[in-house]
Length: 343
Image (cartoon, rainbow, N blue to C red; front, side, top):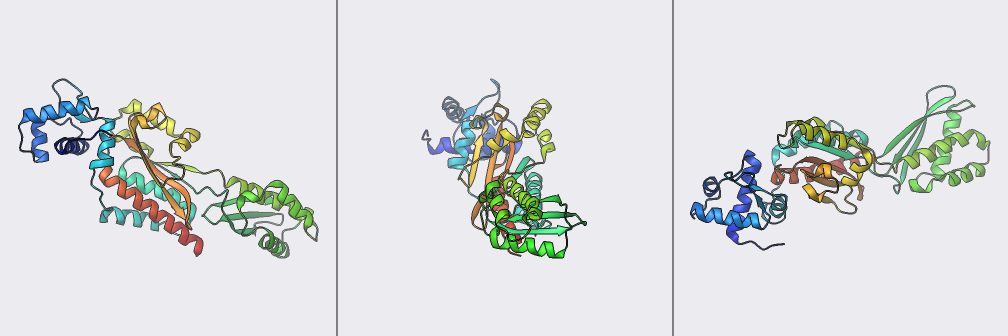
């Protein structure tokens, strides 16, 4: 990364912050006041010209002030931005929003995206934990009719899956108890990815009573366990894209269309084993995001890396405030899901 003099750093940092605040190009006179510089306008213009040559600033029009380039935003975030703690108002909003869904892991994930969209005014994405390698914590069979029951499966990281099962035999209290004993002995405590079709068929055949009655239920367990590997992607705050003049209506509509496609969005928010990621403009792999920043934070459940919460917005956003906010939200989300599973 190019090394800048202290004055150039001061100028670049001030241009970024003033442009984020006002949305208007920053001129030399206004910059001197905002940055508290004691040099002439000519000196500041020369410094800004050099920053343009280095690729950190841009000049939209010949007579206009300067705005940060995408490289300028990156330098600012990496080297110049103050590392703030989350403010008390953001804490209160996050805590109040998430507490309304406390005890319900799936609802917590949805609410996290809604809260983040509200405090950032960006489009937000949240994903449920990927449960393929997680432990089966609970399986319950709840009768809803003579031949019908609801099968519930809960993993150690908060994924709750359910499906309605219909059997040829009567579903009574004795059958539910027998099924509960089977899953306690053979399934609870195993990884979801272990419960493949062959494993469940072998289990059914090993039962010392009429296994044909249990085969549909074990097949349903197999399907639910397999479905935990498919992370649910929840898009929230999409209408926020239309309030940013940086996009324009057509660009916002195009971005919204892109965000409604699951596969590319999963690639966008894939941060592998990292806990936090910021990608600015063309650092993102898709052309639809060339004018956007994507900030993603991972949350952990029971100490395991789980899903993510992220935002998509224009490059001109208040990184200094948003970054500690999203980190706090993802941390609280993980803690509340963990607590919900312990209750």
